[in-house]
Length: 149
Image (cartoon, rainbow, N blue to C red; front, side, top):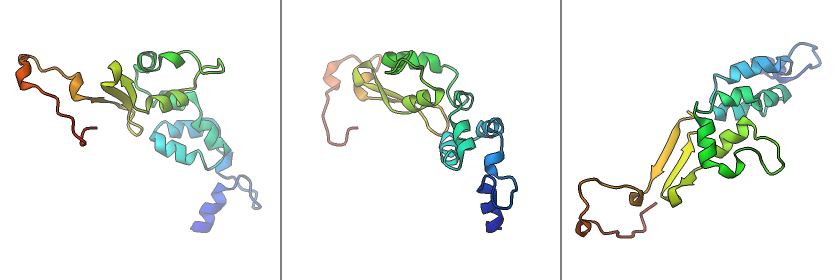
């Protein structure tokens, strides 16, 4: 079984039979639509067709949340229209940028995309929270500790 599997990874080996490299890039992209981003990145290392499909905007747009243009404009204002060389960012690059924790509201909040699910995650510091109804400052004192963050 192992020998027959290794023959599949060769493009057009000595046997002259088809291999994984012979699968059309559009078919690979359709399969990638059903995989998680880490799985896509791992498979992109196999061959040229997989690498090309893994770079497709079609694949990565499906991994971004529906409101990603709004998130991009709020969280990445300096790179909202282009990168340093005036070329538009690919959807894969946008996913990578949004997957890093990005600070909001003077660093009291952080927002990022979950790399596996594509869901939006948020971390809110205690100083960013307000508790309604209890405005008496006698009950609230900030005690810095080594355990925070």
